[in-house]
Image (cartoon, rainbow, N blue to C red; front, side, top):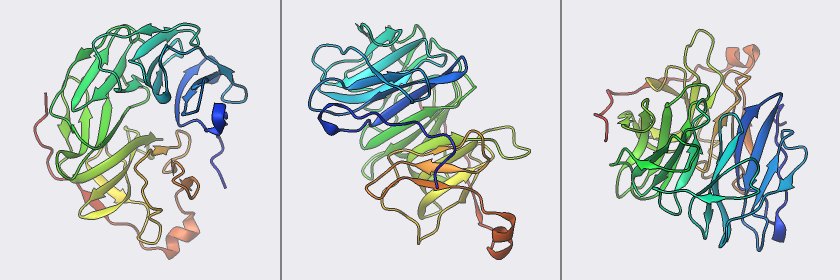
Length: 299
């Protein structure tokens, strides 16, 4: 069984499926841009009808792979960091691209989920911010993980609220949060390691969206959720359902409390939903893990 809203994946040249998706709410239907690896162009595709139909965008010179892409909060523009070329930005749907400045090639890019002019980037321990639609970036917070896989997400509907997960065993590793658009980040001391972070619908009575992470908390590796902005965490899988590595991505269902999904790792996608009342009556309640006080912010 799959979530009720699934975006179709286009097939790119050479038979490679799309790897990364950025979705922006605009008018009645989300606008979607996807990038992927292929033997030749196209490496990028756009949809204006929630993934039902796709059309090809142009590409900057030198592109060899999909990299990462971000859509403005209102779908009015896009920032692309492809393999083989530096970071570029466009308005419209990729009919032409202009090189961005102030951000290194290969940076991971995301967008603010409220301010359509604000985009973010990360590379080698430094966080970058653009306030002009991706035309220029400025280096902000440093001291973040310089090694390993690092992924970050901006909270939907709130400007400047960013969560960053990743690192390596030989350096900084964990979960960080910024509430000032990446100027500073505070590390969650209760999360020993984290590889991906995403958001879902707020729990009943909660004022903050549910946060999901693939992480190590309290010495245990698993999938966790927090309904209090990271103050405490509850594991939602068990040792029999680890599914290999789940650090590529994770997200919550914006319309269903507690539902989450993680991407394929060779064994298909995983989708979880809270148990029914009958199942809850038969199953002991999970034990929340309280986070310890947060460490001072990095700048």
